[in-house]
Length: 316
Image (cartoon, rainbow, N blue to C red):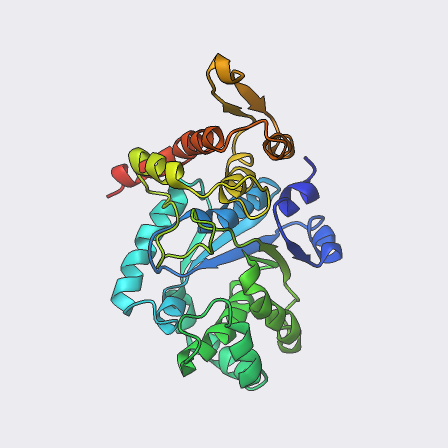
């Protein structure tokens, strides 16, 4: 797969294609993604982790921002709580393969006088209305937003400048904040960041994946728990919005060369697929039973996450 196809696979938007193509030709490329340490690392986070691994393969320097101060401002816990989670989250990311990358703790970056001054300068330009709208998809309890949550997007813009990155990776819910960065950073002497947006996946119940709903698989989940969750997972006959198919598309096929569904001979025997497109077509035609799909996805997910469990055990 050519570099452009690799870094854009499983994205829903690239802003812009032309800028990314030009960036891929430059040496010393740097990209970042930020993660609020607010609980377990789960399959929702794995979408952007996979994208960072794709970018690493084509020569990008990877920066992972463990955004403890962002989590604090977004009412995700005390500073002590989110800092403890940040260290745990880092171990999970390393277990997923994000090694030989730069990890930055947000509070180590964001409390310097230079950072604070740039953030204040940008805050003079961004209206309260735009800051509020940019937080609609990422903020907690936004029916009654706090002033701290209005600081959040301004800080994210400042992060991009201070980290000196050429590109930002995030879920499509980050789009409005990224667009603010593209609009306001050039006026302060910083380049316009390329933005790669990944989809927001459904939880195992077919609804939006949410820590509060517990409808996800943690990357540290034990094998039996994964099997039980997959057995109960929502898996309609339709392809669109099917969480099990999303798991195969965004998590498993990027990591495995082929996926085999093991079935008794009386039910047609084993089926092996080398692409998500072929598997989803077979499922849509009725050639694959939902139970077989769920069982196969669960076993491959166990294999995918095994290094995380082993890494956490060896790095208590």
